[in-house]
Image 1 (cartoon, rainbow, N blue to C red):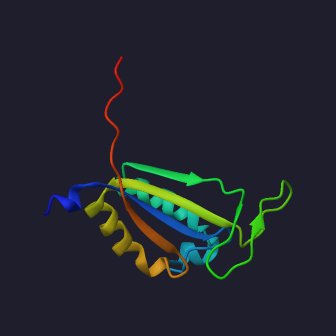
Image 2: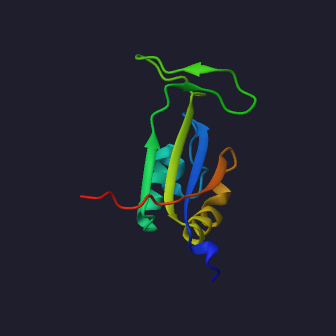
Amino acid sequence: MSQTMNKLTALRLYFHHAEKVEHTSLWHRLTRPSMASHVLKSAHSKGIEQVLVHQVHGGYLRGGKPQLRHIEHVHPHLPHCIELIDIESKLRAFWDDHAHQFKNVRALFLPCEVAPEAAS
């Protein structure tokens, strides 16, 4: 495996707040889990080093209208962002394994540079 594929990388997934997982099993047909919940649980089970679900207060996805988070109601088209951090090869394998569920997801692979340890 190349040195590049072992570099720390962030995989950012962008999708609408109301996005649901594609029907893959009877359980998914009955429960229709949210994309955010599914990605978080799947990444944890695959041993991804770090996952963050960013709380978005406003924004829009390509072709959409600007949306703002409201205290009483979250618009279904408010963007969601989940960030997975691990080595690139592991994140690409995760992406490949779940690509069939990510039809309405925009993904970006971002190379990372770890900051040097702070002096004590």
